[in-house]
Figure 1 (cartoon, rainbow, N blue to C red):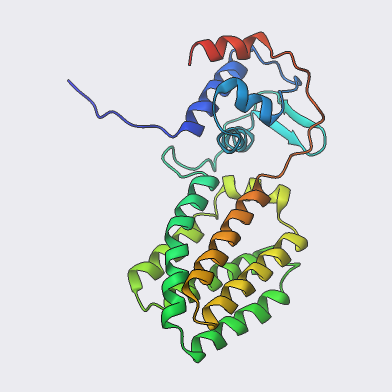
Figure 2 (tube, one colour):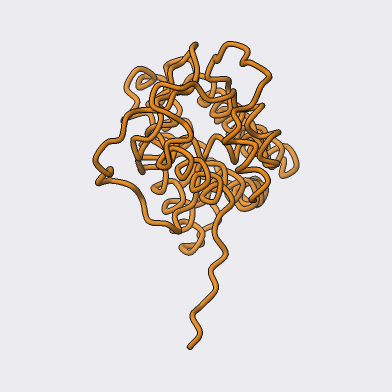
Length: 248
């Protein structure tokens, strides 16, 4: 008689609301959506939630994000075959989880690190410097850096967690979001943030290592939150959005 009640992620609820408006024709193909900030205000959610919802809809083929121009509704397409499952975490949810766990890992690593650990980190940084123009290689080396930091603690559970949470970036959502903002400059910035983490661990300074990891993950989120470059949108919200708000 009864079925389990599921708590759906907020960005999925926002995506559902927006998708419904498009499917019902209340937002016509070719129409331009309000900018993210305006959508967040009207929908009563954060900008990261709106961004995650927009990325879902772009992967599904309902919208087209045009850097420097805006976000447009597209003509109906066949359903995307590579959409992640309903319960999959969004990019910003993963970053928040990493901030909780990896900051503590860096702090403990600074207490336990030996010279050989620092040598492995130095080798990783050298290879990262040579891979800044190769996204796939840079991504693999970035993952390796965080696993190396975790491995200093010699806890296989933590190693698996760090590795698996990095592997969750290899989804259409993360790929689409990264395609707008990851480039040689952002990888160079990430490398220098890694270097600050390495230096704090090498100095045996737990507080500095924790702060350096937190700064790295905060800046990673800021890089993925940069503006799509939409021109200032008209202050009038389409009637369909107003009705959707009322029905939330």
